[in-house]
Image 1 (cartoon, rainbow, N blue to C red):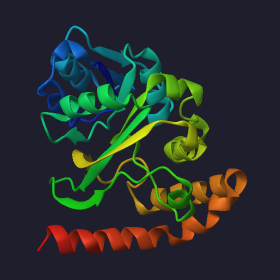
Image 2: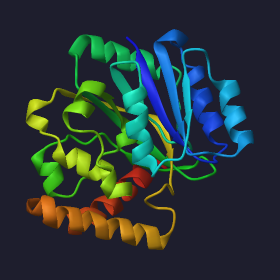
Image 3: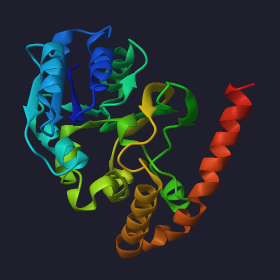
Length: 252
């Protein structure tokens, strides 16, 4: 089983840790293709990335229009059927990640594999676990969100749904998951947390951005998915509940 890992990049040295977490996997290197899509980072970072990459990997260095524009480009340039997207400040926390995913794909032949994500601070402190919620009407209706960095998806499915809609910028993943016809898609959910995701990305880097992103989400819901408007307003309750449960279970 072969995988392509698409990583959008822009002037962030943490991508070297991201690359190491892939390169050090207990998996055949020729079966893992890394595709870095870099938005014209400085020469030092680009050179450092190139030193990490292997002969079957790719780096695309050119100006782009944002993270999902870069991800779409990387998906289209990828060579393999199954695509994993990963942020440049995130990393895989286990060396058997692809081995475990491969076994699941061989057995179930899914369109999508969902798994959990650990939210971490810049000091690698885990403060929240984002579980792989089932992509169904109920979870959408109550405002559940789904992590695109906690997913491996087939390239064919991305193409069938016309990739991420870049007109939504940081909210393109929200729109993508709400467009999916989950009743016609073979999805499996793995209840483990192999990805450490740094809090404070494009959608939460400061209060102004956080407010803007959420205003855009509600606009998407009102104009395209009005049946789910209730969920937008109770979403904060989910997050408070999850943080409370996390502290009770993991931080005793």
